[in-house]
Image 1: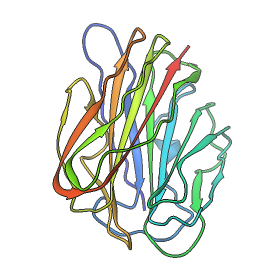
Image 2 (image 1 turned 60 degrees about the horizontal axis):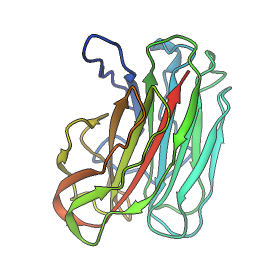
Image 3 (image 1 turned 45 degrees about the vertical axis):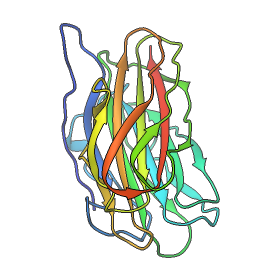
Length: 239
């Protein structure tokens, strides 16, 4: 199943990249253990344009060196695996949208029926036909032992017109979002993307815009229950 939302993060007198829409499998606080997953099932009807950034998170409640397979949908994807051999295993995939979907892309994680989640975010830059390039990451850090406070380690960006996407995955669906700082980071999607399947997990996402290169600083997220956390940051810039 898929959820789509629109969320505009434009602010101030000059336009900035913003979250145009997103999709998720499963819906928050429900279970999914199967794949392939299609987080975006109505792409042709929501007005994507060439140069949008498509940024996808996949994770699975297992540590058995699972594999991720993407049906491309006409796009050229870049994929990295931020965590292998630990629970959860985590991937990041992204592309610059070329203007045409040949099909709805799917994301398949191998192996048996434990929780499997995917979130897709469409980031719209201020210009048409933009081209996105990685600045930093994706990075990975554990955010400490069982705690309600999770620190995602920052990156130092080197290019103008970049965005940084921070991801926090907690190892229990009871570890739900409470607050974050600094507030220059803006939460995207819903507050929580909980998958209640076996080895349940919760995903949370944040975006930071920077017109000129500088350090992002760390992102601190507090949750409503003790749990281990796993953080990533990934920055990209458009030209």
